[in-house]
Amino acid sequence: MIFNLRKPKLEVDKITLCDIDSSRLCIVNFGADLPGNMIISFQLPDADYPLFHVKASNRGIVNDYVCEAVPDTTSVSCGGARAPLGEYLEVEVYSTAEEALMAQGRFIVSALIRTTPNSSLGIPTPTGESTPIPGTAYPNP
Image (cartoon, rainbow, N blue to C red; front, side, top):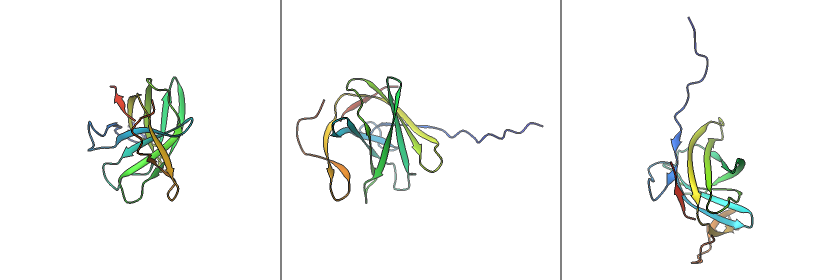
């Protein structure tokens, strides 16, 4: 008798943009708070969603994004290296506790919303400026 000692493979959810499907983990927008730094803003499907961090890749280069929950909301902001505009960005979400891949998606970063750090929380917030920096994105299967 042969036993499979491997852990069962967990199903990896697909990340979408929130305006397409907000019933699961989704991206609200892409932003920039400092030169060379990008913020990916997520909306969680519920308040019990596990803690996570993000790995995003472009042109074969993988960058880590540190994530911070926005208090009293179902929003999470993740900061890391800025991705080139107009190019694909592969986004993978990993649980902090188990380092297991939970969700992934592929997007074209077409613009970045300018954000400024909120000094009391350390969380980026939109500046209210009407001119976006060259975050909308388009998912690609």
